[in-house]
Length: 122
Image 1 (cartoon, rainbow, N blue to C red):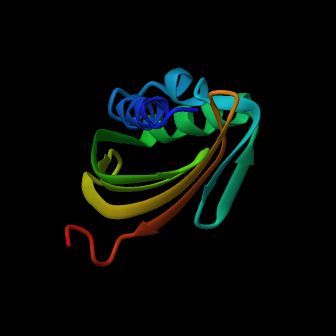
Image 2: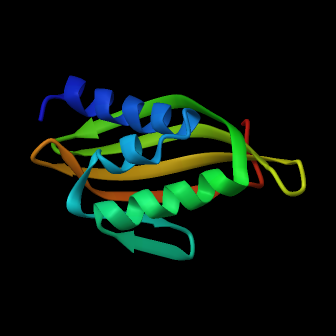
């Protein structure tokens, strides 16, 4: 994959979260793609879609700001700022995320997210 293609997919991933579009996010993954966040690991496009849909039922006003992308072959490291609002409590959540993404055949095969909720905005 070319770096421009990788950057485009990463932007599409961020946009899918902002638009609360679970199908768009899941469609970026291969059939057996992995989505990993602290404490959870989901495998498979359908499962990833279901997880995102569940998230959107409880959180809204999502913002994603990509800070930087570093690309090496078919892998990328992404730093982005994340913000959402928990609907039940109206609590604003903020985090700086580091994400390592692996691509194969123009799709995400592994999306590993490291979330820092303590020192966001730095």
